[in-house]
Image (tube, rainbow, N blue to C red; front, top):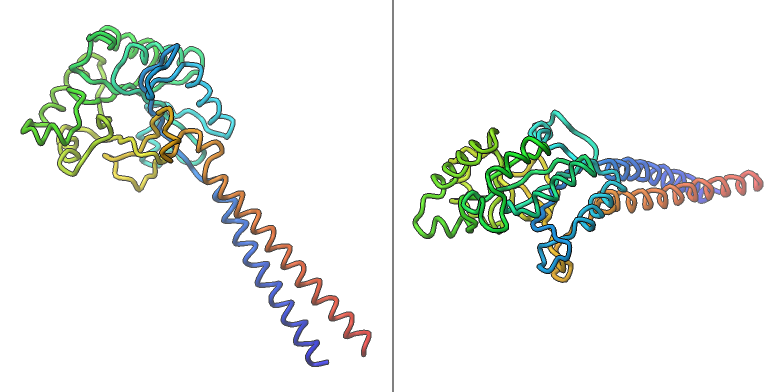
Length: 295
């Protein structure tokens, strides 16, 4: 009889412990599903018939955006990024669209995104390439600024890896200050964002970017942005056809978001633990009935 009483106590205590674990798991999983996410998407050429890995058709670009929207992502207006970074805007899932290089095809896509989707991207411009064949000129940039609400960032004076510029003995900070002034004069807005050409950087080039008066620097590391990141080394997901072959995260990997997938798994495990807890309470009740019959 004493052994039965001990068993009843054991199953009840185990049930309570499992119930506590299940509750912790449930709230943790729910938090994962609801966690805040900001993805910065990077595109280059937008072509009717993409040929190069970094080119994409407008239709596929829109499909990527619609895919994110199906999983609760909303477009973040460029002017709200600094507020988001400062914590004035928080919660929810957001994405920010960016284009690198200043290609003519990017300009066309930016106009269509504003008209068709109500999305205003950020265009990172290489100032020495402005007006060259295939690239937007000063008048084109002014038109984008006034007509599409496009925001602008700097992609360098030349499209060279920053560490190589420094290694060649050139003053990267001065080049960026000069390019920044040129771009600001054209679009009539302060330029506070910079995208590292080819995503290449090192401590010296990061310091040069800061010295040029840049607030936010963007790489092409495939992660979501976290407010704990270095403001001059913020990650972006770059579209690159075939990148799945080398195992790099892609935009599609966020449909549904990783946190939501993990949260779903955590909730499933929590429900399993709840069932185990219920089984312990049922077993304790069965033993209690058996004990009552014997007495």
